[in-house]
Amino acid sequence: MTDSSGRSLLPWLSLFVIWIVWGSTYLGMSAAVQTIPPFLMSGSRFFIAGPILLAIALPAYLRGKQRLTGPEVRSSALLGVVMMVGGPGLVGLSQTKLDSSLAALIVSTTPIWMALFTAIHLRRKPDARVFGALVVGLAGIAIMVGGPGGQVPLLPAFLVFISPMFWSAGTVMARMLPLPRSPLMSSALQMLFGGTALYLIAGIRGEFGQVAIGDISSRSWIGLVWLVFAGSLLGYSAYMYANATLSIEVVSTYAYVNPVVAVVLGATLNSEAIGPGVLIGGAIILSAVVFIVSGTVRRRRAPLQTT
Image (tube, rainbow, N blue to C red; front, side):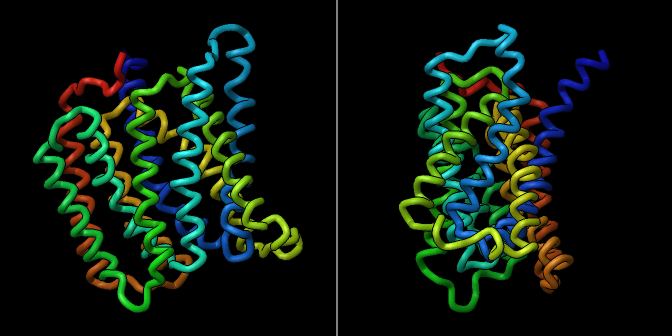
């Protein structure tokens, strides 16, 4: 009984980790790209985290308890490139020109992309309850941040805008493609393939010659270390587990909570002002999250996995 309760609680614990930890990555990424070129930074982030996860997951495969198939490796490679390059890769590039709060606001469109790709896959319209919560959540984020304001560079803003498209497409694809049964192995392979792709892009852009180890500030080192261990090792593994065990509508709620966390951390650690709009918007966002979760936690949803 206790073991069963623990297993039922673990997906929600994973979702909570995603809510909080990934909200902090905007500040970490902003600090890291101050003195580390963006694709080199993102590639290093996943190329450090990937082997660590692989070392943890590999013993079970070496003992023969689990097997890794060719289709699973190919699916992991595809998801790694789509999600790592299109997601954190593009966001990291944009944050060389945009502040973290604006990036968090734009990335919050992720649930809309997820609803769109899910509807395409299932050939149905998004549930009215979920769609209403998405609209309320986005309205809360707009109130919280207060709108873009000022001179916003068009290209970086566009890159952040399309980033959730790639991330959401990968999230939906992960429910259809054959992946390793171990979330740790799945995450490790995706990080290794995604990190390789990011390094290739960094090489094409000449980023390896743009910085020396001694030129990297302590703030950037702290940001990178946080992205590796909290954002990637803990956060991404939790995300893959939650995505495999919870409905996609529930998983997508992280995009509402992350901006709240990003703004709070920006205020406490980066001296950013918090006005009434932030408090009101944050309350609306959390209400939207509760609205979605409370409506889905009691319902058993059919998995998106096709056979």
